[in-house]
Length: 180
Image (cartoon, rainbow, N blue to C red; front, side):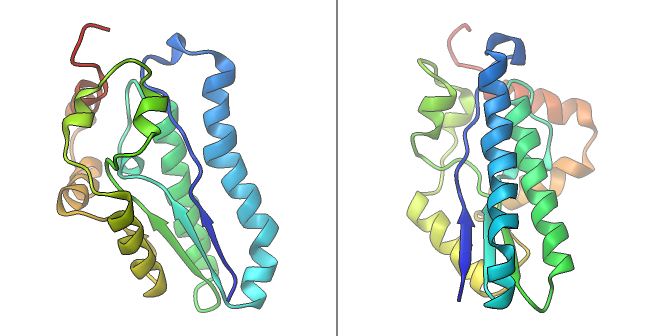
């Protein structure tokens, strides 16, 4: 088997104008461009081996994310791209988008230097548990895996709710508990 796991990514919290253009475009370069390039680069071998691709998106993919705009948009791309190629390659290759919610890693420290957003108060799933759930879903041939009940609720409700409250809640969770 030949399997590819695309798990690299980062985000930045705060208004897009608060960060350098290079840092913000870097999110697109890593989260979108590198994932796409690696997938396309190895896809012929993956198809030949009847292997698969596991792309790590996020529950953020299901909603807009003020103060995390480029990260959320990049994860929407990962989800859309993964679902599209899963359809194109069905029966030949497994393609799964893993869409976790908060996972306690160094991601938050990189995204929020010196700050603690309200979102970090949400109880996250361990990286080990998230990875295990994602891998089981991948092995089972699931197109999208959303670990955790609340993440499933968010993924289901966000696209069905009016955008104004979704934007407001997302923005509220992104900002620091201290004055920014």
